[in-house]
Image (cartoon, rainbow, N blue to C red; front, side, top):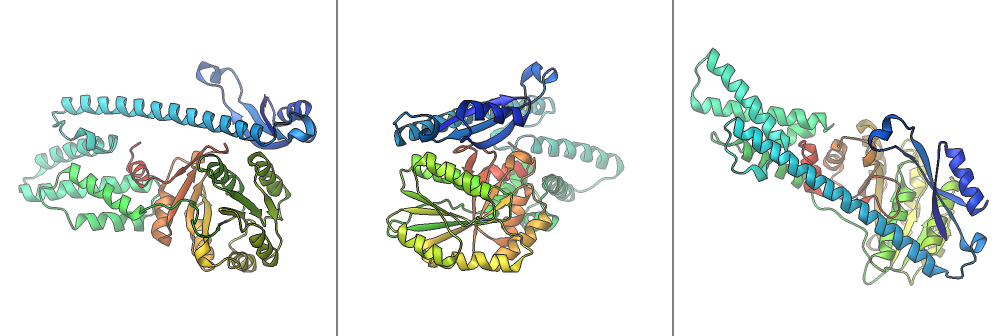
Length: 415
């Protein structure tokens, strides 16, 4: 399998380049816009980048087979890791600069800099400034006892945190549930540091532990992926399959029942060819039973299901039949949701699938939204276990295990 990227002003031009170089058998794996960086972004238009692949047997008679495929995948993985390291270094530098600015402003405001490392970035500084403003207004209008003044500070702090959570699209009922639980534990002399730390810890506990795809040492593990159309199930499966095969050296097989979309089958077939893993297309639970027998010597079998409308009860029942071919102790089910979906629609989707089967949660398209509130919302609504986040189309990159501490910081305005 040969994989190459082509850039042009339009999607059609980029695809034509791919077809000319790789041949008419080339398959488009990914399409994305590439924006110019630096000053060039003001003078140059965004270009379209197409990632295309072609089987070596069709156009490139190299005879290397699986070795070349694995080398190509390894190269892609190394590039993804390199980008991740660069992004991590950039974030660390931004955090360091942000911390320096906070320290400087705190000194100017005569705020004790002890415990600065425990602050949740700019949120605490904003609250402290607000407290100073409110203190001055209170002092001008009326005299209050110290205890009552401290209580007012705590209330104001909680109010500002609530505004931050709502701004991050956390539903008000869940924000209230978290903050009211904290309010009852506050003492008169509780500092802002301690209030924020308590809220942060409460959110982390609400998000809970995460679960990832792992093999069963005794039996084959069957992993089903369910969810609406267009949320990125197929690409997510390819990412997980790549990580299992390359990093963990696990014997993986693929099954797809998404026969409604030919493109989805071909996309998964392309990834299967690259990885050198088997792919079987099935149309019923009877064929699922046959596939189960064929794959009895594998460690993990990943199963792509067709995207179904949560409004269609009959379709969700078909998925239930397919899943229950495998005993409960031999399977895991992951509901794949887009972080860009409206909360009201997510409620209906999770309730519909919840009537069918117990599931874990994967959120996709984090790169297309600036808010992560729905992760907390759906976790508190369903109490389902969180699993992965994806933030792009790159395979095997752009996927990570959900980090409860990281999500809690983002919800509170941190990095």
